[in-house]
Length: 261
Length: 123
Image 1 (cartoon, rainbow over the protein chains, first blue to last red):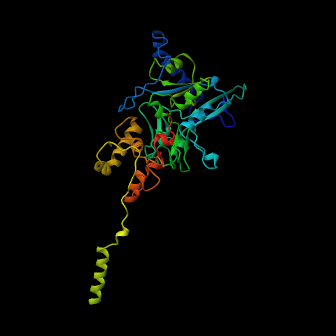
Image 2 (cartoon, one colour):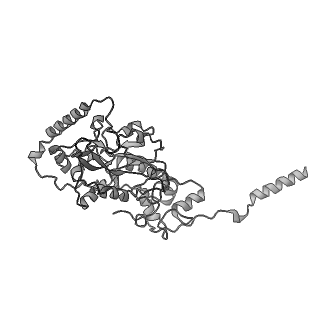
C-alpha cells in the first residue's frame, strides 16, 4: 500500500520484517494483558472521558489514543478535517496554499497491485517516542504525561527541526500573523504547530473535535479513548480486532492506530 | 564666566519646570466585569507577569486546568465593555497600561485578546 502520488517510504536500515515482528509482538502483548475482556464484557462501551478536577495534573496512568477504521472512512467526506480547522481556527492564510497550516488532512491510499483504495485522516500520531521531541533544541516540542505531544509556543523558536523529524508530516509552521484564534487554542506566527488531540477539550472530558464530527456525520470511523485502561472501548477494540500503526517499522509506538490499511 | 553661569541657570530651570502639557495622562480603563481580582491591585501590578509565567508552564506542560491564575480569566473580567477586548486602544486594560509604561506586550501574538463570548468561543 503506498501513498498515492508519492513514494512508499520504507525505512532505510530496518528490514521490512522488523516492523511486522514488532507489530505481532505488540499484538500478543496486548492480548495477554487484556484477559479482562472475558471478565467484564461490555463494561466501558459507553465510555466518556472524565474531566480532570481543577488543579489535578495530567497523569501517566492515562494514554490517550485514537483508533481509525479506514473501512468506514469515505474518500469524499471531510467532516473531521473541517471540524478540526473550525475548532482550532486553522484558517487558510493569504494566498499561499503551500504555506497553510494543516493539523489534520484526509489522504487516499491505493494498493498498486490490487487496486484497493482506502481513505483515512492523517495527523500527529502522538508517538510514545516522538522524534519531534528528540530533535527540539529548546524543549518546546514536548510530551505530556498522558502521551499528548504538544508544542510549547512560549519557547518555540520556529527552527522547524521537528517538521523535518516527523515521519508523518504532521507539523506546520505559521508564516503569517493570526487574529481569530480560539481563546482556548493559542497559536501564532513564527511557531510550529500540529494536532493537539484537542487537549483543551480532552481536559474537559470531551472528545477531540474530529472524533465528534465523525460520529455526528454518521461515519463512526474514529474512536477516542484511554489506551492504558483495559476496560475502555478503544482498548477492548484494539485487543480484539487487527489494527496497525503507520510506519510501525520506526518503532515510535504511535497512539493513533488504523484498521483496514 | 557670567555668560556661562546664566547658560547653566537656564538649563537648570528648563529641567526643573517641564511644561505640564507634556505629561502622559494615566490610563483610564473601563472594564466589562469589575469585581474581586485574584490578588490586591498593587500585587497584581507588580507580579502579574510572574503569576502568568508560572501558570502557563503548569497548564501547558503538566495539564493543570482550572487554576487560580489564568490569562483567559484575566481577559474575561478585564476586557473592555465596548470592544470585548483587552487590546485596541488606551482605554483597553492591557494595552492602556502597557503603552503607558512602554513595555512590549507579547501575549497576544498567540493568545486571543477578546473575551470568550466576543471571540465566539466553542462550548
